[in-house]
Image (cartoon, rainbow, N blue to C red; front, side):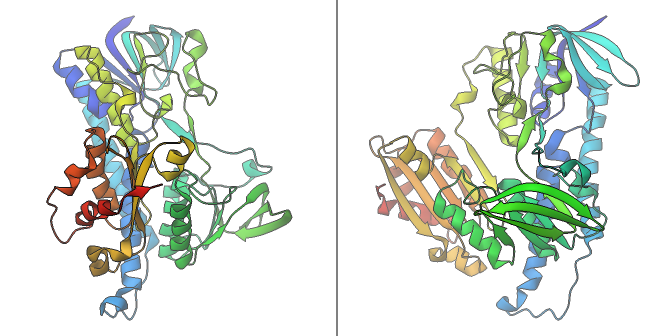
Amino acid sequence: MKEYDIILIGTGQATGTILSPLLKKGLEVAVIEHDKVGGSCVNWGCTPTKALVKSAKVARTVQTSSEFGVICTSYRVDFPLVLKRVNEMRENGESGFREWLKKDTHFYEGTASFIDEHTIHISGQNPTNIKGKTIIIHTGAKASIPPIKGISEVPYLTNREIFSLKSLPKHLIIIGGSYISLEFSQMFARFGSLVTILERGNRLIQREDEDISEIAKNVLEDEEIDVLLNCDVIEIEKSGDEIIVHYNQNGKTKKIKGTHLLVATGRNPQTASLNLENTQIELDERGYIKTNEYGQTHHSHIYALGDVNGKGAFTHTSVNDGLVFLDHYIHKGELTISQRIPTYALYIDPPIARVGINEQQALKEKRNVLVAHMEMSQVSRAKEKGETKGRMKIVVDALTKELIGATIFGVGGDEVIGMLDLMSSSHLPYTVLQQTVIPHPTVGELIPFMLDSLHPL
């Protein structure tokens, strides 16, 4: 039986981070993948969705061009052409990634499962068993499908199937009101679909502050997206070419008809096929693999990186897991997963970017903080672009003066947040930012002046 220094199960975004350093050390690496190479980011997440966001942004620019003195008498969205561009981009990314793995590693196509803590069975066209001195589980997550009556009887979409559409949906119903839901709702509305969001809670994106949630709702509604809150979906059925969704809202039973249904109710870790019962690897109450600060499971030679460990749900956190693994595996260093400060962006237009804690977390944790707010309508760069929706918020520790959180909801926020992440992770007092010269005209240049208005929460 062939034995490898490293067995990597799955090819999410930590793969590119860890492989080159391991191969440069002359280690023999086996990579196992049962699906498309590159995981969600390359195939169904970051790359294709942000390409769609751009196409939708172009459509919106044409729709509102008269506001800038540019008159477009007619236009149309060629949705198959939109998807052709997107699908070519993701297919090229996947094929390039796959060729690299085939060239530089021992690449196995099939489904991996544990026989014991060192032995992996690979099923597929050429089933085989291999052993690994070190094993990395990097299988990611997939869409969570709620147990709604009738859902298995209708052709629902997730973030994967939506890229297989042949035509633009006339009326897209979306169950769920968080990140995936909001991005797709705005994109398809801009392409010309009617869009309805059904959210179970009393507001959208509940991880964010209430005012941020309300602004996001207003942004979507301004683009004629119907946002229905407090909706408990109870049954789904198909009638001819229509999908009918039955739901309870504020004590009343209602229904809505659409041509397509997108389920965007969260993600579940992909561990079912691994046969972890043949090891002593433990799962938490949500099904994620339990790991320590270095990504190690119960077995010190088995690591779980990326979405499957529940310590992050983004490409950049997966990449960071890879860096932590390399530091621990090669250098026995002190880099840990818990050292990183949560940071992410939601790519509606304008984007919502976050680092660290927000106001509702500060209140919940009874933190002694100072806060500062600024409307995007006060930012010169936003005015010049004609993109004044949104709000900026900063949270500072009242004692140490360190910047511990920020929400930038507005044009350029996804780029500005990196500067604030650096401030926070470096544990610098906010006064350093006030002394920083930032180019004009930019969104970021207002943040040092915004800090002059810090006040107790």
